[in-house]
Image (tube, one colour):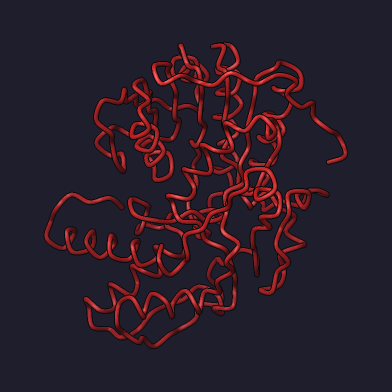
Length: 349
């Protein structure tokens, strides 16, 4: 965008270890891991919020205040932000491409969460506010080839975001920027690129490609079908970011004053095709499967990759976990979950 948002003139305050931080969407994969991350860093007061009943949260962390609240309701956002020094908004109704392409209304309605939560954070006097955006905010005209040119932050404009989910993210970014420019709430915005890892959704329709493919390989082995269905023709490309890199990046971005109200890529720059993803999963599983391609299935844009020039310049860092290493850990976790489900045990799906 041509408009330049004001930079911080003085160092911005951050939450101390004894001050309250609020993490929204904490019953889900990324936010649940972020709760554990900050707890391990020594933050003594963490409020985790999610609309799901506590028994359905992907993970919980001992010593954390857990609230089951629907944050699309304004009053619940004010309750969640009471006394907060920092607020992390990772709450959204979303999933993998199969969900995003068939539940656009649900994805768009997530704008209610950020609209109410950023207002509540400002009214509560929060020092910093983080918003989890997405690479789906980028112009889809730049993502029509599997050999995609890596997307840099300015490529979000002229705007032609992914319908539903992408447009919701782009408009919510604007809310965050204007709350800084007009009201002085220090906001920070990261555009996630396909986060995956243990404790993530791996079955049921909301899972993303790494977990879906890992599950299909595990299932083919267990059922001895020797076959796998692949959505699309297998040439689609993406970069995938391991969860540990994601939560570290969130922390670094939110506490970098140079990034106030400035969207930034948070993703790996390692481009992987769906076919190669299957190759890696087969290698981990020690199996070779017959592939059938579902050309009418949801598959999203042809290619998407993260240009990490800006994050390396500002933070001197970028996500570093190789996809093979990350998928190996994810595959082994899903393998355990699959076996536990077969044994009738409680699992994360």
